[in-house]
Image 1 (cartoon, one colour):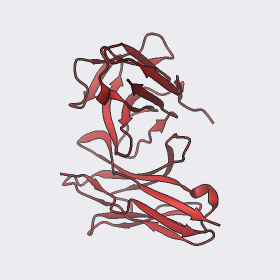
Image 2 (cartoon, helix red, strand yellow; image 1 turned 120 degrees about the vertical axis):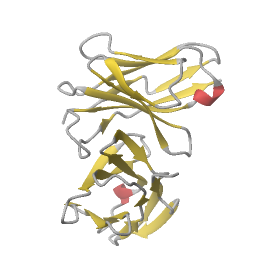
Image 3 (spheres, chains in turn cyan, orange; image 1 turned 90 degrees about the horizontal axis):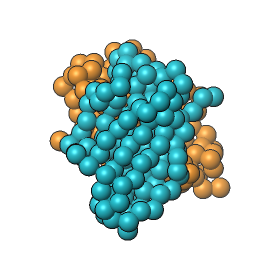
Length: 116
Length: 114
């Protein structure tokens, strides 16, 4: 079964450094998402992306965050200057379309980001 | 206001028994979808089951069933014949017609005992 792939599985960085989290969505999917889960807390929406532009973003997704689809397969999340509170599990997800409330999101295994 | 509420932070269940995970939701949108995801210790989010607000029957997928009570705004997940591999965190999530992002509850940790 096709799956969403995320790399790396773990990333450790120093505060203030830039990090790029990478995702390869399912090949025929058109909608892409980033979510994050701070340890012990709920999964939070960050951003959705369609047709090479952001379709929706949360208040968490400030100017320090950016997303990009640099080629036909990768979908990246960049954090320009990491803060301690950015430490979390980051999930990439994709969906085939946006046909309604029942459109299923397929999630990757996540990247655990630790900011020291 | 919380859109999805899961009041059980953790539950224990004996192998082969059934367990019910509670989920209540809050929306004024008549069209919405409710999802359950499983997150094992390895971290990935696995889709389990979906219920649409206009679906007349409760959703079922193998050992998973959804007890959908629309008037009470609840969408409880029932796992029948629990297996050791069911030990995981379970998240209830909702998508509304006017807000396409998926909103998650805080999750319930299920531990299946042999």
